[in-house]
Image (tube, rainbow over all chains, first blue to last red; front, side):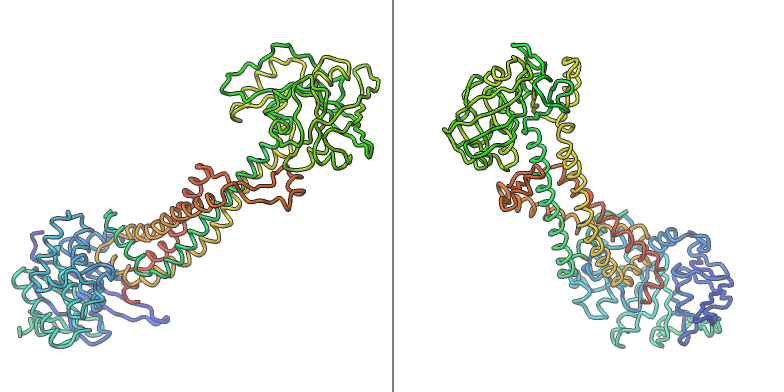
Length: 233
Length: 403
C-alpha cells in the first residue's frame, strides 16, 4: 500500500445496549492516522477510546460509518477475513499482556509467525533477534508465570511487532505497570516508532503515555474534542 | 492451518491441569479396559455357545431324512454309500460322522429313563462332544462295539456304574419292540449335565443290528470355518436330494439367537460405558475451555481463525482419548492375560448349562472388537469436543477478552 494513511475512520458510530439503556460509545468519529505516527487517544473512562481502538482493530463492528486499514475496508469482512487482517497487518498490546501461559517467551514471540506460516528457522532467528533488540533475550525460555508485569509487557510488544505489522494497537499498555517500568516501556515504543517506523495507536488516560506520543487525540462522550500533535517529552 | 502449533498448544494445555486431566484419563482407561475385557468375555461365551451347539451331535451341517425332526424314528432313515466322502477340500473339513439315533428306554436294577440311543463310529466322533469328553472306564472301540457309554449324570440317576449291565428297549425297523442288554464300558463327563442325562452311545453297527436295518438317521459334517458354511450347505442340498440339509442355526435356534444377541450385547455394553464417559468428557472440556475463554479470545484477537480454535479444542480431546484408548486397550489386554483360561463359574453350572454355555467363562479378544472400541471411542471423543469448541467460538474475541 503506497498511501501514507494507515487508518481512516469516517462517521464511525457505535452504540451499546446496557440493560436496555443505549450507551453511545462513538458518535460519528472522523479520524485519519498516517504511516509512522505515534498517536495517543486520550480521554476519561467511558469516553470511547477503547471502543475506537477495538473497531479499528476489527474486534468490534461499528453501527455506522466506514473504517479502512491500510486500504482495506473493514465493514464487509467476515470473522475469518478480519482474523486474517489482524494476523497480517496489525499488532496488539493488551492492558493485561495476554501472553499464552503454556508457551515460553520465545514461543510467544514466534506464535504469530507460526500462524502466518513462517518457517521454523526464520521464525526462531527473527524471534531471538527481536528479544535481543528489546533486551529480554535472557527471558527466552521463561513462561509468563515466571516473569514480572514489565517483562511480560515487553514480550507482548516483541510478539506484536516481530511480524512488522502496518499498525500497532496498544490499549492501556501501562495500566498494570509501575512508573519506572512505564517509562522503560514508552522509551521502547518510541524507539520502535523512530527506528523501525512502526505506526502506533494507543488508548490511554496515563499522562506519561500521552507525553510520549507525537499526536494526541482527545475523546469525550464518544466524539473527538481535540486532535493535536503532543509535545514530545 | 498450523497443525503443529495447535498440537503443541493442545498438549501443553492438557499438561497444564495434570490432576483434572489425569482423572479423566483414568476414567477413559477404566472404561476402555472394562469394555475390552467384557467384550472378550462376551465373545468367549458366544463362541462357546456356538461350539457347544455344533458339538452337540449337530455339526455345522446335518443331513436328516424328511420328517425325522417331527418324528425321530428309525423309519425316517437313509442309506449312505460305503465310500461316501463330502465334496469339500480337506483344509475346509474337520470331519463327518454318520449315526443312527433312536428314542429308547434304559433300565437298570434301580431305575428307568427315556433316552436318545445313538449308534456311532468312535473314530468319526472327533467332531462332537462325545469324542472330546472325559471318561471313567473305557471309550467305545469301534462301530461294532457292543457295549454302551452313558453320561455320569444318567449313571447317578440309574444308580449304576462302569461294568454293570443295562437293558435298552427301542423300536425296530419292523415296528416291533427290540430289547437288548448292554454292559457299561464307560461314563462320559461333559461340562453340563443335560447331555449326560439324554445320550447313550453304542457302536453304530450294533445299533443297526438291533433295529434290523443297515441305515443311518443322521449325518453331521463339521467345517473348519463358519463363513464357508453357506456355500457348502448349498452343495449338500444339491447332493442329498430328498433329504433335509440343515445348518446348526436351524437345528439349535436358541443358541443361534444367543449368538446374534452377543453381537448386539457388545454394542449395547460399549454404548452404555462410553455414554457415561462422554458426559464426563464434555463436562471436563467445557470447564477447561470456559476457564480459558479470555486466552482463546486473545488468540482470535491476534489473528487465529475460529476454525483453528475449534481444531485446538478437538485436538485436546482427541489426544486425551487417544492416550486413554491406547492405555485402556493395553490394560484390558493385560487383564485378559491375567484371566488366562477364564473364570470358573461351575457354581452356576445348572444355569449355564441351560443356555448351552460352558462353566468356564474364557475370554476371546478379537482384533476387530478392539479396533471397533478404539475407532468409536476416538470418534466419540471428537464429537464430544465439538460442543465445547462451538460454545467458545460463539463468544466474540472482544467479549472473551473482557472476561
